[in-house]
Length: 67
Image (cartoon, rainbow, N blue to C red; front, side):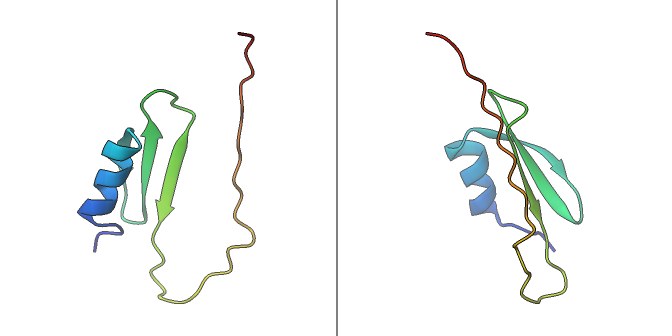
């Protein structure tokens, strides 16, 4: 059973210009074509029940540069 459909994959790969780097039974990983540290991981909820998303961590690293 796919965790996301073709339209969602097209959104991440074409609109956000991300590369589909891993497809496991439990989830998908997309990485930026320009910055390999920028990734999105999608995990399938196989238990079909509402999850408590409070403990989800969203790490963001920003590189500052002088112009």
